[in-house]
Image (tube, rainbow, N blue to C red; front, side, top):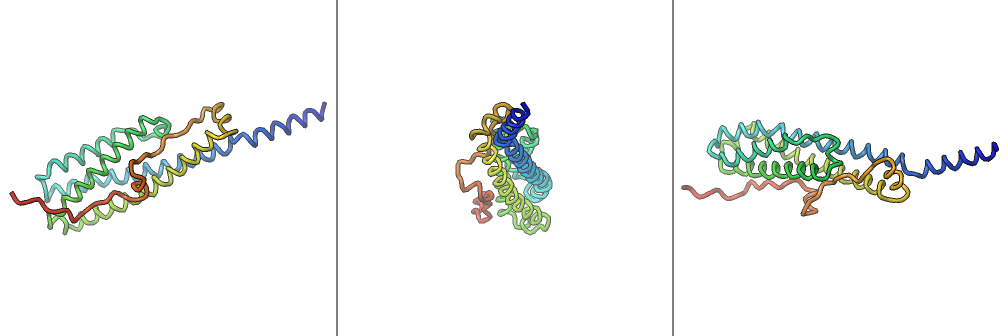
Length: 202
């Protein structure tokens, strides 16, 4: 009887150690950590936008369309609650990604506007904010890359046997990941062209 109990205990320990539960937990925590860093960098960028818009407005108040686009894009980003649960909702994650892409595009247009305003380009505060925005775009790229890799490892761990059995019992599902039309966009920050031709005089 004692031998049977020891044998059953040994089998149970063996099954538990091979079920992948611990690995799923490790990978899930890695995703959470990587996601927090993505949010941190996106928030840093959003915090820079009002000051950048304010300075450009001082020199180029009539560029209302561009200024409005940036303000609206930032507002759209702020309206999405970026909770940890967002990565488990593919539709919500897609909306978050689109809002951030729209803000990136609007910021690019705003910074290109500076080419037409020498005094704005010479403003020390503008140059500092411009450098901070560009630096933040690079940090966002790095953070997204880490998140992409963390999600890939997590998704593999919950979809492969025998971990998938544990994941199914425990309710762990694959998480949403960043998708891009151009794979090069994953490894490079948005390009801001300051050599754009000036509009013809009216």
